[in-house]
Amino acid sequence: MKIHKLINDSATLAALVERLAQAPFVAVDTEFMRENTYWPELCLIQIASSEEAAAIDPKADGIDLKPLLDLLVANTDVLKIFHAGGQDLEIVHNLTDKTPVPLFDTQVAAMALGYGEQVGYSSLVESMLGHALDKGARFTDWSRRPLDKRQIDYAIADVTHLATIFPMMVEKLRKNGRGGWLDEEMERLADPSSFAFAPEDAWKRLKLPGRNPQLLGRLRAIAGWRETEARGKNIPRGRIIKDDTLAELAAHPPKSQDDLGKVRGLSAGWRNNDIGGRLMQALANAEPVSADELPQRDFKRPGLSKDAVLVSDLLKLLLKIRSRETGVAPKLIGRSDELEALAAGVRDGLHILSGWRFEQFGSDALDLVEGRVAFGVTDGKLTMTTTAKVLDNADKVDA
Image 1 (cartoon, one colour):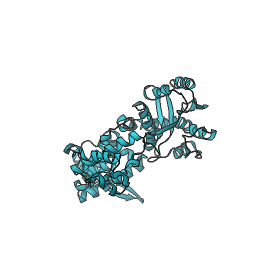
Image 2 (cartoon, one colour; image 1 turned 60 degrees about the horizontal axis):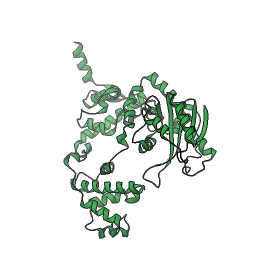
Image 3 (tube, helix red, strand yellow; image 1 turned 90 degrees about the horizontal axis):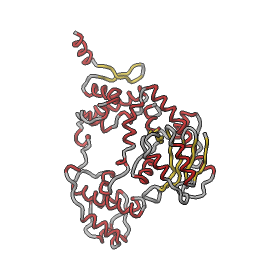
Image 4 (spheres, one colour; image 1 turned 30 degrees about the vertical axis):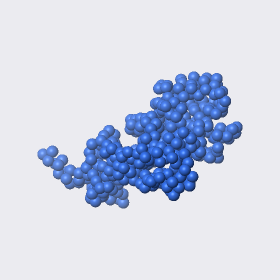
């Protein structure tokens, strides 16, 4: 594979992109900093096909990234490969209001191939290629210039290995017939709505303190205000107000701005500064959330009876057994909230009751819930067996 090292001019980048546009896939990674900013600061982009690889310096004076961004979000003939690409996708979305399409995430694929849940990139490389990655530059400050050779080599290695691993994973998925299992997950990852949300929806991403419409209305108002402040100042939202302080203000709103000086987590200056005034205005404008906007009740509070809780635990045990037997990570098959819903009597709208998930797990899960299977121990191993109830029904059908 030809390595181009660091590209820092528009002409060289455009020529690279023109060649990459003829490849069936490109592996992509980014290096960024976000400790002191709301928006991640893009510091380096690495990209590779099966034939060449390069690192691109987005901080280089006058460099035009448009050809590269067009390749990622507009060229649907080239598959884009990431590993745990959520933050990389967020960066591309921030620059283009779009996400890379089509895409393939090797961390998700690894869950269908027996490598476990959320396998790290270095672990995946070691498992599939048999050698360890150099982690020496892992915690470098990517915003500082110039970047040295070791940093660039480290960064490019991520995509060269990714370009090698991808065809191997595709072949394994082809052999075991699981490629189609990943389509839904990849579509979800590529959904732009995951990265674009209005400030007034920021409250939905917090741990919600109950379902009181007035309290949630205040939380919605001040969470949206905080999001707007953080974006405008380009600082982490926690630098404005921490989540726990936000929840306290929603639960016990101050009667006046002067009372802000008594709130734990806020400085005394909030009692008379402009930001404190804007916070109080947000609280004053707060309206209760409507019934349609209230969060769904937790199935365990109070929708799940004591017996149903036990059934939910049995479903989780069944999921572990099926995961072990198939070599598919439990998280890819089903989530805990869906198992609890099934135990509570829900049948509609559950992913585990449709498609490949139903074939691999949902069918047996229904049998368990409806009393047609049981657990046992055979040769020291936990197994699932068909109960007499099913056998009796089968005999009647045969008769």
